[in-house]
Amino acid sequence: MNFVFLQGMPSPFFTRIAHGLSARGAKVSAINLCVGDWLFWRGGTAVNYRGSLAQWPDYFRKYCERLGVTDLVLLGEQRRYHKEAIVVAQALGVRVNVTDFGYLRPDWITLERDGMGGNSRFPRDPEELESLVQEVAELNLSECYRDSALNMALGDLLYSFSTVLLRPFFPHYQRSDHRPHPVKYFPAMGMTLLRMRLKRTQILERLARVVQGKDRFFVFPLQLEHDFQIVSYSPFSSVDEALGEVMASFARHAPASDRLVIKRHPWDPGFRDWGQRAQHWARCYGIEGRVDYLEGGNLDRLIEVAAGMVTVNSTSGVRALQLGCPVIVLGQAIYDSPGLTAQSGLDEFWHSPPVPLAARVSLFMRALVATIQIRGVFFNEPGLSVSVEAAVERLWYGRVGQSSVIPQPSAPEKTRGGYPRVG
Image (cartoon, rainbow, N blue to C red; front, side, top):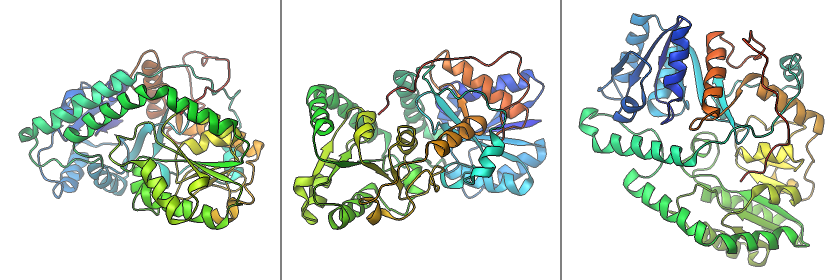
């Protein structure tokens, strides 16, 4: 087997997977596209690509043909270079293995074949799902491993600023994410996190008033504008457009006694004042007294008492299903299917939010864990080692996206407890 790695998390995750595969006899290499890639790759042979994006597909094709590459491993299929590489790889019959944060949170990682989100090959048909979970043992979603926000932030800083400041070493590199420039993004994110910390008491009091209120409410958790789930897998050009559409439908079709709760994403850098945008749309549609905006707080507390959740395609929708909360999806999501989410449209949802079927939710969760989720985290021990071991197993046995019932050197770890609150 011959694996080539492209861009990954700013963590040792890819490097350690490469070592694990090499130890089993696989050939491993990487292509660095920027200084950040070079800094975080310590997995063996690597080449530095300094050409243009236009030249990249031809370069990658020749690289794969020359080395006899069998597998491509990368983080997220929507990055500029990754999109081109996937087209080439699939034409050559090279297996494409895509990873990112898990559909399940907080200590799961996604590892899928070909793509995620709207590009996912994960089946929606119940019979197909049943065939995937025949040998799956007891499902345990309790939190086993904590990730490190500090390690993630430091890695992101190092990766981003080294790529910007040392650009002459990769003069043609084009950033793949849709975040603002690091010089703007990181100071804004730092100030926002500080502001949230200083307002913590006020935020929690506001959350408590909403949760303890007598009015029925629906919750709409906002997503990040630069998230590929919004950019690539939704019908909206921006989160603000989605917000306006949701509030327009709520104003026209929801019962007059209902309320709509808008919740800010915890990692939103604050370039837009979402409280002001919510007020703007509320004034436009004459529902100023029926809309609440929350800057923070525990999303689980809202989900547990909400009449339903509206989401573009956030992974918080999966959490809502676990808690038995009705969900409607406005974009593309792997959990958007009959029996799990509302299928009759947003206007109808306000009046008749369908409760997800417990049996379907259980089946969906078991199939996720069996095929495209691995336990562990990207940035902190011991969860990092656990995720690396699981990823190596699936990659080595060619079981990515398939049932994970593969030969194991020891019995799988048993855990106890319930799934934690998140958000």
